[in-house]
Each structure stands twice: as C-alpha cells, then as structure tokens.
Length: 211
Image (cartoon, helix red, strand yellow):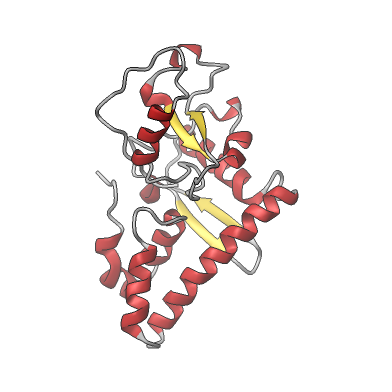
C-alpha cells in the first residue's frame, strides 16, 4: 500500500456514485490498481468507501471518500477498519515497512509510528495478506500465491543484478517493475530501501506520488 493521488477536478456526483465516469476517474488516479493490495484491477473493481457507508452515511457520495478496490479487499475491509490512514494524505510506504518473508509464507508490516490509524492500517494489511488469525482460506491462499509468484520474479531480477548476471538487462527489468503502474510497490520499495547499492541505483524510481 502506497500513497496515491486524487484528482483535484472534483466531479459532480449525483445520487448514483457508482458510474462509469466516476470509476474511470478513480482508475486513472489509482493507476488502475486496488488502493489496498496494489493488484491490477482489470474488470474486478468495486467502489470502496474509506469511511464506511454504515458509519458515515454523510460521506457516501463524497469524492474524497471514494476509492476503487478489488472485490477481495473490499470484502475484507469491513466497517471496523474505518480508521485506516488516508492514502492520499500520507506517504504510506515511508510510514509502514512492508516485509516479505517467503520462507514462512508470511508478510509483516512494521512502523515506529504509534498513531492509531497506522495500527488499524497494519491490522487490515495483515488480514489481507496473511488471512484471519494467520490462517488462510482457499481464496486467501490463492491471493497470497499470486502475490508470491510476482514478488519472486522481482526478487530474481534483484538477485541477478546484484550478482552481476546480465546487469544492464536486469537493471532495465527492475526499473520496469518499479513503474507506478506496477503491482506491490510497497514491498518493492522496502527491498530497494533496505540495500545501499539498490538505493544508489534506483532511488529515483521510487518517488511516485510522494509529497
């Protein structure tokens, strides 16, 4: 999960906020990715309210409260997560460290910030990637397997670059993987930031949407 932008041209939202026009604008803002898990949306997208409809009925059609998520994330972000950090107003990738642990088939999210909204955000991300109580059902397992496969590809590019195997080729592949439209940038950024040589080589490619 990383910082995203929100169009300053606020559309006129009538009774129905779930229109092609609104969804298209949010698609552009979010680089066609789910704002929570960062997967490509394709045709699997739903309007998601940062503050839930149940608890914040006055914000149901508020532009600043409308995001797009995949059905997987939308089904798990219930109204108990109304207090997550706003991804438009914060450099999430600098606040929450995304830790990939392929050996244990788990991911972890850590922070030095004790703000309650950060804690709620981490709790939600743990739920999405690790399942409930660290147990994954079938859908959650398939979600994680997809994540694992794509991160393995990125890590293989990193490993080959660092060990000197076709350096220029893998440098270009890493840059492509760091494009703002790519998936799982929060995790990729953490890998880059955690290695001095990678920071020197690729710091200019992890600046998207930051303020």
